[in-house]
Amino acid sequence: MFGIFKKKEKAATDANFDVIGVDMHSHVLPGIDDGAQDVGQSIQLIRAMMDLGIKRIIATPHTMADYYRNTPETINNALGVLRAELVSQNIDIKVDAASEYYCDESFVAKLDNEKLLTFGDEDYLLFEFSFMSMPPDFTHTLRKMRDAGYQPILAHPERYGYFSVAKCMELKDWGCLMQVNTTSLTGYHGKEVKKFAEQLVDELLVDFISSDMHHLKHAEALKESLKLPYVQRLLTEYPLLRNSTLL
Image (cartoon, rainbow, N blue to C red; front, side, top):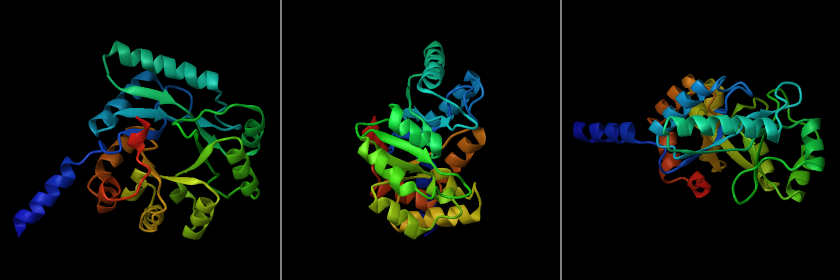
């Protein structure tokens, strides 16, 4: 009997994100948002992610009018710096870039006037809401995303305190996919966030999981998450839209 428990414990310890393959939400580009502040920190984060089985990284720095006024140029310049350093250090991993767009008036203007940074064959567009409240006219914005040919993905719905399972179901019905931070399931962002993340898993509302990696504390939480039954479920039997299809 005790041997069975030891076997299960070893399996959880040996688990990694190999089956997921791609981390499609991270802040590892150097010096352009609240993630890695220089290329040295970028390399630290990437090495930690590789140690956990990640084969490819899609960096998604913030784009928001009031704080991180990133453009395709600033993002691609930072990506070039990072790629050069990876080559210099003989680190064999593919890193690409999109963005995590903050849903505000400037985002709506960008939908009308710019080609936004996306990833995957489906033109996945990652966006986030304010942590205070959801935009009142979001149905219109979502329709604009779809009409422009994008497949919207809402970043970390479990972290919006005003959200509910019913609201996530409603957004899914409107054609929006959901990306949960794996670290949320560890309690890193608090007990309520953890509870809500678990509810989203139970209701089969999660389409993607990712690290939302900003710093090494996130890397530690990501490693700890591999011990959790909910994460084991996501990695084995859960109907995710497998990140590995993005390889």
